[in-house]
Amino acid sequence: MKIKVAQSYGSCFGVKRAIKIAEDTKNSYTYGPLIHNNQEITRLDKQYNVKLRTNLSDFKIGDKAIVRTHGIEKNELKELKEKNIEVIDATCPFVTKPQQIVEQMSNHGYDIVIFGDEEHPEIKGVKSYASSNVQTVVVVSIDDLKKFYLKDRVAVIAQTTKRVDQFLKITNYLIRRHKEVRVFNTICNATFDNQSAASDLAIESDVMIVIGGKNSSNTKQLLNICLDHCKDSYLIESENELEYNWFKNKKQCGITAGASTPDWIIEKIINKIKTTYSY
Amino acid sequence: MKIKVAQSYGSCFGVKRAIKIAEDTKNSYTYGPLIHNNQEITRLDKQYNVKLRTNLSDFKIGDKAIVRTHGIEKNELKELKEKNIEVIDATCPFVTKPQQIVEQMSNHGYDIVIFGDEEHPEIKGVKSYASSNVQTVVVVSIDDLKKFYLKDRVAVIAQTTKRVDQFLKITNYLIRRHKEVRVFNTICNATFDNQSAASDLAIESDVMIVIGGKNSSNTKQLLNICLDHCKDSYLIESENELEYNWFKNKKQCGITAGASTPDWIIEKIINKIKTTYSY
Image (cartoon, rainbow over all chains, first blue to last red; front, side, top):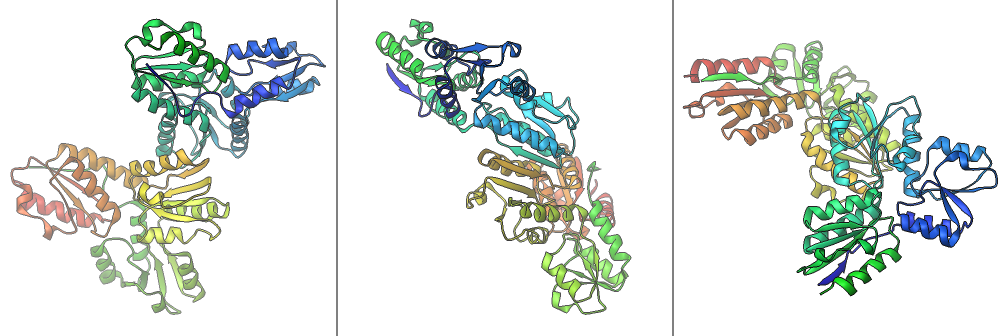
């Protein structure tokens, strides 16, 4: 069986940057998981004493607080700073951007449409930057949009890890109905590159392994894209999940990985496939 | 044979308004055809002495110059005013709007994409409002767009009489490639309503008569929409063009008319079909 990795895959600029920041900030706490990858979080804890905290109230003067790649809510950041806690911002710059856009556009009086998952930390953070004088709605579909009555002037952004074709459905719906639609394509190129490479590879493969956190939005997207072209596509976090049957009688195994997956995890899995399942 | 008119058809707010302005401004000149309908222009000349001029240099002090519904170029308007000619503006307010948008957006540094026909008077007028510090391109297709290298921030408008589905192809292309795309849906509702009603009617009819000027962009669009659903669709300007064969063995004749077609022309044609071709 041939093993082929996607032309573009795995950890992006923002994730690499956040890991570097964490490694450089020993004996600190991240507020929420730094990235959506449990194994990497365990490694940072063990090797650098960078621990995970999920309650804001646990932070005290003298603590070092790392802001996660997905960003946090505006008032949470304010609270940390007011407590005189040393804040180290590892928010991905591609997430800081939509936060700024939402703040500016709402200040300019545009209603805000956020194409993303209401419960995703990135979106919670981004949404929190909207001023209260406008309507801000988070949607994943046109059906969601139909619930709201928005003004003539609308600004729209996307969660960085969303699929651009789905984003266009939202913008098309809005453009048909509103006088001005200010579209900010905040979808991250890295995600997009990974997606298009995964699609290309899935077409020519008969089994696809997607590596990444099961709580990672962009990794789940990659799995869906692979499933569109290759029914034998599997999402795994570690080499222990690999199954013998997946590779039986297969000619080519394609490999891709989510934007929050560090290289060392990918390497481990490829090695396991090569040594154990590659007939 | 049943005769059925579209739910929405014929002359729009801007055309009705321009005709009213012309009727109220006897002994005057329009600079270029007031609307794209030769019969109406002849009527205004005969009944109100509103004459057509096509050369700016023919205008002299004391003349009354009516600005056509499609608008004229910024420097032409300036020239008329500087000559101390009395200018009566019959530009459709839905055309004034994109003129203003192009002026404002180019002043704000956005590259401008105009989805329209380069040679159409409306587009010549609209384009003339762009400041020279940005790139302004007129396109009818994605192939046209590919010829240009535009900035990260783009503003896009449409000729008022274009089809919204084609406009969305342009905006989708731009949104995929640019950080900010400011989309102004300047397509006129009247045109859109006429289009969607024409489509509905063409589906259930076996012959469609589209009434309007053969130089009218929106009338030609209507013909194309009808042809999509009903192969026996014909564009005519007057009842003299009707042909016996079109109606032979037909069950339902659908009627629609372009946004520049006055009611009196439509009535004449319907009467002729009723009396002569309705078996």
